[in-house]
Image 1 (cartoon, one colour):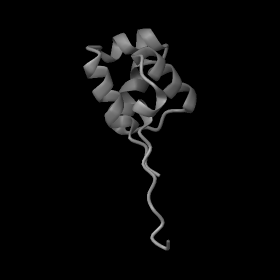
Image 2 (cartoon, rainbow, N blue to C red):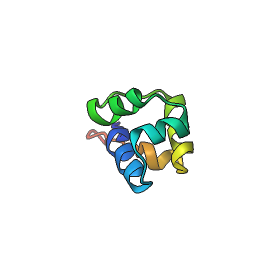
Image 3 (cartoon, rainbow, N blue to C red):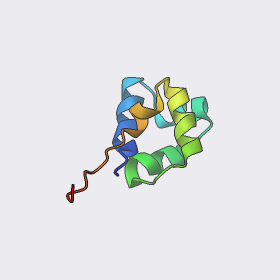
Length: 74
């Protein structure tokens, strides 16, 4: 399973026309945490993902975009 939060967070934030600081103010998540997720690929907690999705006015699946790898045995 691969989470694509890093790319999706950046893309959704840009689409909303928000800076990292503006998203931080809306979500209550620290600007440095948002930067770490977008730049360093840090994995956020579920709670952080929920706060960011709410602040961006998107459903969780739009932010997470989970991809499940198929088992090659089957």
